[in-house]
Amino acid sequence: MSQTLAQKILQRHTDEEIVSDGQIVNCRPDMVLAHDITGPLAIKAFKAMGATKVFDKDKIALVMDHFTPQKDIASANQVIISRVFAQEQQITHYYEGGDAGVEHTLLPEQGIVAPGDLVIGADSHTCTYGGIGAFATGMGSTDIAAGMALGENWFKVPATIRVNFEGQADKNLRAKDLILMLIGKIGVDGALYRALEFGGSVIDNLDVEGRLTMANMAIEAGGKAGLFACDDKTIAYCHAHNRPDINTKFAADPGCAYEQEITIDITGQGPVVACPHIPSNVKSVADLGDVPIQQVVIGSCTNGRFSDMKDAASILRGRKVKKGVRCIILPSTPTVWKQCLKEGLMEIFTDAGCIVGPCTCGPCLGGYMGILGDGERAVSTTNRNFRGRMGSLESEVYLANPLTAAASAVAGRIIGPDAL
Amino acid sequence: MLYKGTVHKVGDHIDTDAIIPAVYLVTGDPKILGAKCMAGLDPDWVKQVKPGDILVAGRNFGCGSSREHAPIAILGAGIPVVVGHSFARIVYRNASNTGLMLFELGDAVNDIQDGDTLEINTETGTITDVTSGKSWSCPPIPASMAAIVSKGGLVNYVKARLGAN
Image (cartoon, rainbow over all chains, first blue to last red):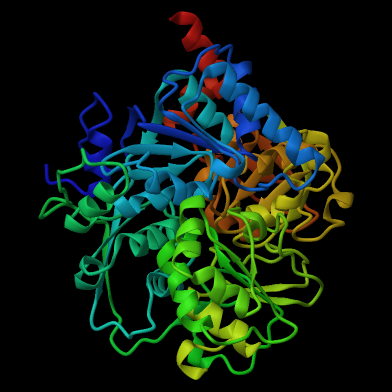
């Protein structure tokens, strides 16, 4: 049978033969993930299951990233639960404090997830690893507890929507714009229960960090996974990130059965934003009119990688953040942070009047470290703009690429980089 | 199983930040989370809810994050069942794992009004709007979940498997 990427990767992790989409199969994951919010619930369920030992201490990752550094007593107490569990179970991949970064940047960067892997995580943006050709999907804490105890879980083989991006890219168009354009086209439930598989000449030329950005937001279209083939770029990325063992390319088989194929021509398309309060409310930046802002956030599992920091710095170099705007820059891992320091980006950011913070999810989910007040408006490189997501129910979030976010910080209103 | 309660309707794409904002995710306690159920939609929403009431939702209910705190908050508010047009994938699994019953009813949810009395009989397999007299068949639970539900939820299912080993 000609296989989609989803079918191909799931097949490698089950003894049952996959013959069709919609089939339920038991699969063995390569990595089971939870963080400081979802981990404690998973640990509670693990214990309630009567489990005493995790299935494999090397195949579990616990990353304390959402409220790190611990924002209050309650969140500190939550971390204690994960820390004690990690110590008891001798979990290899436990990250806290200065080790920790935003999990979905950290795990591929450290080589903890790899192409062809099956990853389940108690975080909806687990789908990020599809950017390097892993079948990765979010589940809840109890499912993750089952995975930690048994080393397996059930999966419904998803139908696949193939999305091809073609055409000539504008110099300010980024991976974020591509995925927002797709979500704008198919809606926040356009890929519900399905896998998205990305291809086309634009994707062939896209760097791996950009692919991670796109896969990250598959869930914003309701997708179970966002998948990219493993090509020369993926192999080179793995070699540069602790995985010299990864050398085999793979892609969907020619003639495999897609439920739907979509082609998006990007020629002539400039950067876009997702307007409040839903990620599918996508408009061209150029069409927005005058939208004043009070906060900019550049970071997160969507756009907190070094390429994103470089984009932001290219705009902020020699410029100043507009008075009355707080521009918060959160490199998403300690490695990204250090590279920003080494290459002079921190000086650019601080000279521009940005606040450079720690590696945390913090403001993305309205946790802390950049919360919006009543009537405030933010441009953010994060992934969700639901009402109240970043603070007050009366606030607004516009999702954008790092170039647009940085330019908007300088202008004090939403503009594209060319309008500066 | 028989459920009977007053309907509280919500719209399409009710996300997990609406069901339980992230600021409250520093606990897993159903009572504390239940008191903030739908606080992202309206901080006072939960005040109208009585134990046993039924939530009726539009498309893609529970989209967004994987937080199991969402079904826990709904259960904690005293709501045992949600009837929706459709559900986001993760919340669908989370609900059955935590004991919140979900029924996917499609366009028929448009016929159910806020404040109606809804009756769900899982044995006869019917959902009845007592106020309007309209009635529908319960959509069946997927086979993969039925195995788990028959063991009394995922925690008990794993417990049984670990015991069997």
